[in-house]
Length: 279
Image (cartoon, rainbow, N blue to C red; front, side, top):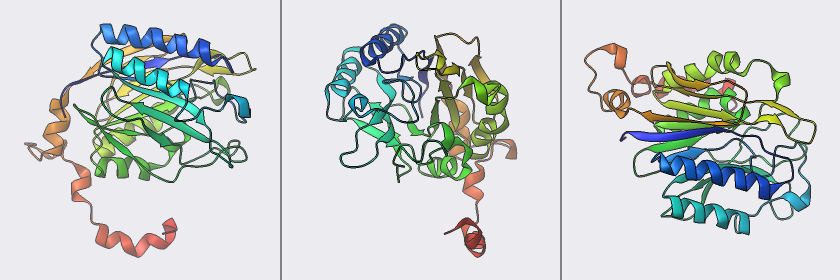
């Protein structure tokens, strides 16, 4: 990994107003580019605004104009854009998808693998845990509810992910987002020796939902290195220092305090317990 500058946006997405949401995103993208940001991450379903059931006319295709516009913004601003949407799935329920739009390659994407109970009747779950290679770091993606399943982060780390982005669409009714994230996202970072970078929708969406916002970055030792919980639309810019993770991952630690725990796993003894995990 090389030092990587990231931007996390807590964004107010107006439900159904794709043009307005894209204009908001473009403003942040251009500001991030002026700050020489490498990767900018927007919240879950920021393009349409979050809905448990998305109207057909608002669904976005990977080959459509919306994604093409994001590709142009990535190229023009030399930045990687991570953006969430409800993806059209011909003949079936849509996916909750997060795009990985690189300025020099084709569009990549991750489809939410773990759907909340209220989402399951209306969306199709993805079936792959995916990492993405960028010029400075290998990144992984988990969307909101995905982060409650520890295996996902472990698999991403074993795939080589060094930064795991976790975009959310968490409403105020779920409670204090900072306190909740600190319960488990710090553990995901520490146990798997990864940076965890998270962001959330914020404010009223015009469809009866109020989102609590929040951005946070946690280092590979589980320490919070940056956060913003002011509850308003904003962008958090952080440069991730690669020295800590490189020391851990390359086995150059001078003490056990910087061990890469996953390198010491014993999969051969875990097999006896596979029945408990449904595999």
